[in-house]
Image (cartoon, rainbow, N blue to C red; front, side, top):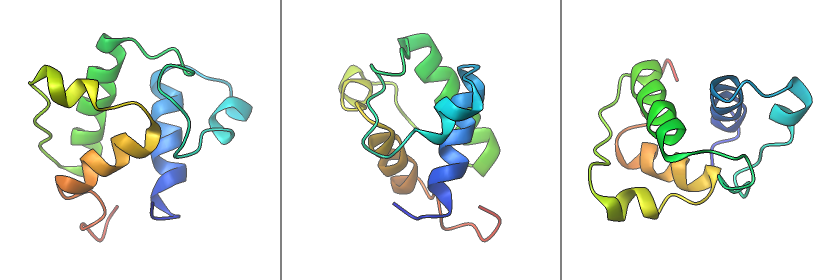
Length: 90
């Protein structure tokens, strides 16, 4: 995972979940979404925020796609498949 995008993605996730700053700092690419207590609704909100923040379109309409998202790294990889990290502003 790109070193400069991990803190951004961690902060975005942490703010979406209203985590304390020290909790956000502890998020790594191997952090499981389950350990963060992310519900399916929160996951969809996080994905929509990633789309807005990085001007992407992420298609996760299928159950298979949502079920494959287990870690912060999985979220990053999904975003990368849709252009995350290719935009100079990100």
